[in-house]
Length: 416
Ligand code: FAD
Ligand code: PYC
Image (tube, rainbow, N blue to C red; front, side):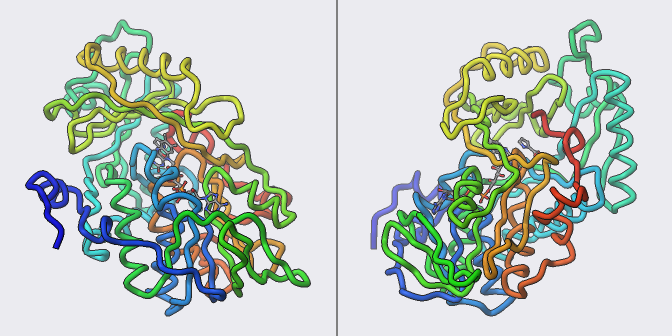
């Protein structure tokens, strides 16, 4: 029995991190699986979990080139909301939000889901009109959404700068009260533990380097640990989808950009909600550890560097200090970037590919964390039944030739 310090026990109790995450080691790789999932982020692990739980498919391997949850799942700012404009997106993200609401109980793992509300600020009349339109669209889709005028915004979040003379004064905001934040790595660990318990093999340090395709049908994957045969392969590798698709001879309409975030030193509780602003390209919340979690706009250039440009952070901090002058003397502790896959319509692809038995789930861009449970749920359905779930049916690859886009750019409320 290993010895645990009081600090470890306290952290485990607070974060849901338990002995499983410390004691667990990758099992040996088998030569053949019914399904191989490439990518051990939250989406890949959730897919494996639902394949086992909802479809009884347990001869499954999740192959991860690094460590589970070490990609965008462990690098994001954890905002969970479903206030998207279009019916297709509202259906997808609301499905996910409903799963979030029961996830700690479902996984018996504290994912620290905190429905503290997400506000999207409007700084002028035009933004207000746009955001009000979204409130109405959300309500028509059964998604909770409210419009707050300037006075109500400042009452709800008094640390915001209420000075009407600043560059971007607060004009009003939308508020989704059921939205909030969760603990990012706990989501990966919770799904991993659930999948592992159902018999799924989770293999870390195993990079997929190619696909075996036999007469137009997937037959397996090539990896840094040898060839693995599989009847079906699901690929969920945020930031690297076009690289993997290229290995199968498929061209995806995706661009890859760094997206940055940073956290401050821990503070006593000061910000009880999530505040986002499209216009100033910044957003902020406070983690349960007390750190301010601050996100930036995405870097404009295409890159795979998990670092990002300094100019973006400078602009973000200028915006944050203007929005919250009270934070102007807080020290920033850590900064990083993740690599996000962006589709031209800012919506994901969750679909069958032209190679039989091959499925891709990608293109979540800057907003896929919130989708983790819903994405895994519908992707498992798509793989198990070889046809989309009604919720992901619109999110095809063909929409880029048919024109049936789900154009969420600007409507997704993200400051990128
Ligand atoms: P990942 O967690 O990246 O998992 C993919 C995995 O695939 C990685 O672990 C990687 O190592 C692995 N992989 C890659 N290539 C291979 C290979 N060849 N073989 C095997 N494995 C491979 N979304 C929100 O909803 N809310 C937010 O607040 C938010 N904030 C963000 C802030 C930042 C700074 C960033 C970078 C992203 C943010 N996102 C947010 C987006 C969100 O993080 C992602 O959309 C989501 O986490 C993607 O999850 P995933 O499981 O698909 O990807
Ligand atoms: O989709 O809400 C979001 C988001 C916030 C920060 C990055 N993405």
